[in-house]
Structures are given as structure tokens and as C-alpha cells.
Length: 480
Image (tube, rainbow, N blue to C red; front, side, top):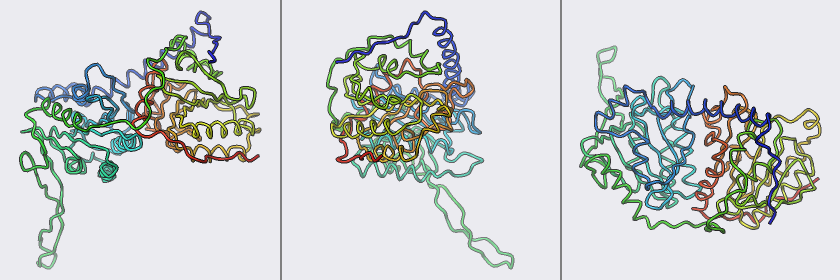
């Protein structure tokens, strides 16, 4: 066991200044979160409640097990865009009847739950998380279809994703709370279990119907007009009818209870886990400083601050090693913001190979500060190619934590979204105006308070272990 030492002194002026700067950025992020949670505004929220209906996050809270956490994903997606805040949908991971589920809840207070391109992207991301991590999916549906003026988004892909979950034997539940049109109308029919709220649920599917109209010469000319078909109530695609919204959520919990669901991945190796020896409050400083020291971060998120470093004297611009987080074994790959040379690449490829050999989840801690000119000149594309191969071929779960000053549009690299980590979270970026930018553009799964890092990663590790954790037989070989 190697217990990490720490050099952080919270009493220094530099510490206090950095902490103050990060708290300001977190306050800005919290304002954005509150805007997203407020939905369409006080007027529409009041009207919604007056009809005896629940808000989306109230539905989620009532669905979840009491006092269990909810890891909301990209909560401020579309914030600051041409569309209403929140992308008219809430998505996340929570525990229902002891089963970790992905939950999608339309927000009918935002243009009636209208679907815009951000909504589609956010829903598809949630469905992808459900698929790769083998998590049951619960849809809490109330949507008026495509939002103007963008026209119909590529919503058919949502139906395809839902069909794929069923094909993979991942259970899906759909609760319809109100009028549901467009592509969302297919969700009840495509789900394994469908519940509709009596007197409120209406599913309108639009089908082209040929009609006759007079042409220029007075003769009938065939046209196509869309007319609604309304299968609602008893005649709709409902397995069960709920008396009200609360009863619908009770029936959804009942469905999940009967899944007979079991995780395929191993349980935590150490339980209960030992907390870190250092205070998570110190992470506020590390998020705001210009020089990144990954060992300081690891000392505040790993169990017992225990980290066995791999090849500490080689490729020193990259830190690799083993630890546990909430009892789950993890292999950590953390860069210091410098461009990788041959030594770092060889070290990373070797380590990723070992993680796959031992079926160990990989945690990539990526510092996104721009490398100095000397570092860029030292970098060689031939050094990076083997790492690209190793990351692309690795089959153990990947979690990515982005730290540093780079705004959303510049995030990426071999640890970014393009390489499909199971989850990707960021700390607030250095420029305050961009505090929520990554989540706003859906390039990550959320901007998080640095102090919540251990909790968020722990929830992610539990989720990925719902599926089999298995490494590739061959990842790659470093070629100088």
C-alpha cells in the first residue's frame, strides 16, 4: 500500500484566492442549473401543478427509492442556445427497487415537452448509457413532438435505440402522463412495459392519409395530408392503467421489482470503503490553479488515499497506477497537460494493456491546459498513434474526468467523447463565462463541483458494473 502525501496548504493566500475564484464559477453554474430546473417558468409550472400534475424531477424523485441519489446527466444542455433551457428533458441514473436504472423524463412545462435537436441528442446519450452499461430504462413521457422552428429532428433514432435495448434484453418501461405526439408516440408501443394515466394520457401517431383535391383543370388531384390517430385510454398500447400520476409511478416501480435483475460485473472488492485521508475541499484550489498535480487530486478521491504508482520514474509527464474508488478497483491514467513523448506513450500503452488483462476499469484524468510551445515541438504523431490504438481497442470501461482551462469546443483527445468513454465529466473551466459550456453543448455528461468528484465517479463505477467488465485479449504494442 502506498499512501499519497500531499503538499497542499489551505492557509496560504494563493490557496484562498484560487478557492474564491472557483466558488464564483460554481455559483454561476448553480444559476444555470436553477434555470434548467425551473422549466418553462413560473407561469407554466403553476398551471401544470394546478392540473394535478407533477414536474419531471418530481416524477423522478417519486420513482426512486427513498433517500437514494440521482446522478442527473447534462442538466443544463441547451442552456444559452436558441431553445429553452434544459432541452425539455431530464435524464440520469437512479435506483428503483434496488435496481440502477437510466431515467428519461420529458418536461411538459417547456413548450409542452417539445423535442428539439438537443433533446434528441440528450435522450440518445441516455439510451446509449443504458445499452453499454446494461441498465434498465424508464421513460416518463409527456411530449408534444417536434419544436418549431427547427422542424422535425431526427427523432426516429430514439425509437431505434429503444428497439435495440429490447433486442439486447435490457428491460424498458414507459409511463405516459399526458398528450404524446410525434416520434415520442412510438415509445409506449416499443417498450416492454407500458403504463398510461387514465384521463390524461393520449398518444397521437401521425400517418399520411391520401385525400382528393381539385387541380388546375378542375379534375381531382391526389394529395397527402397528415391526420392524427388517437389510441388513448383502454384502446391504447397500455399494459396497465393508472388512476393518477402517483399511481403510474407506483406501477412503474412494481414493474422494476419483477425484473429479477442481477448485475454481471463483480461487486466492490473492499466494503465499506475507507474514505480519503485528505479533505475534498482542497479540490476547489486544484480546479483553479495553472499547474496540475494529479497525485494531489487522487489523494482526495481514492479510497484511503492509497495509490500504487506504475513506472513512476519513466515518462514523468504521465502518471499511471492502481487504486480503489468506493471499493471498485481502478487503473488511473493522468496527464500533466504536456504533449506526450515516446516514454509517456510506451508507459500508457503498457498500463492500458495490464488493465485489460486484469479486467480493471480505467479512469482517465485529463488536464486540458494548453501545452507549452516546447512541448508541442517535442510531440511526434508517431508517438501518439500507439496510444490511439490502445485506447480504441481497450474493452474495459473507461471513465474520463476533464480538468483545466480548455473550453468545451476544444475538449477531446484519446480520452474524449470521440473514443466513447462510458462517462465523461468536467470541472468548471477557467473562464467564468464558459462555466457550463461543456454540458451546454453535450460534449460531456455534466459539469460537476470538484468536491463531488468521488461521489460521481463512485456512482458511475457502480453503474458500469451492471454489465460484464472484461478486457480485450490484445490492446496494442508500442512501436518506437
